[in-house]
Image 1: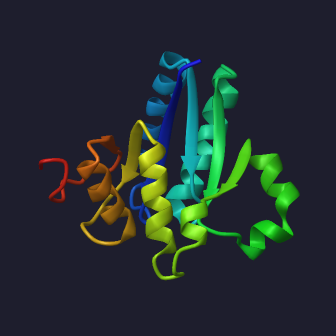
Image 2 (image 1 turned 90 degrees about the horizontal axis):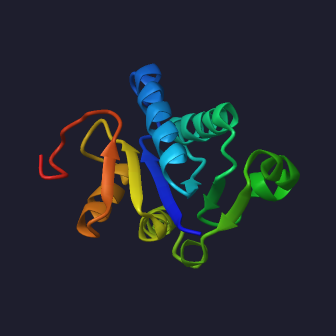
Image 3 (image 1 turned 120 degrees about the vertical axis):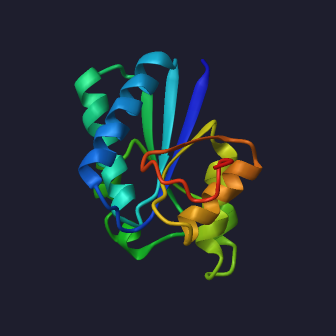
Length: 162
């Protein structure tokens, strides 16, 4: 089976969330109807992460293809996960902890985690609305790795050859 892996990155706060969500739903529809199997890698650290996970669950339920997996990738063991593991496992198909970031210095753990997700991905979907922050740096890394990148916000901030 051919597995197509997609990771998602965005700023903690999202402007124009309704339009971003609409674009995301169209993209998700295309992915699950055109790919044999899709692995969605998500985080849980900001508004975009929650918007993505919710949209994936909704679109997968709507189209019921059974060819997807919603995977939460944590940068290290978090108390919230440890204390609510069953709740997480009932929402996500899988929960994984990135080994590299769990062993990294705490100040760099998120960036190490994001790079590991990019390295696993065929496609990077982002919501970058300004040219600063961790999500922006992650997309710059994805560009250097020659990953396919889709920015749902339409922001043209000095990456992707723009």
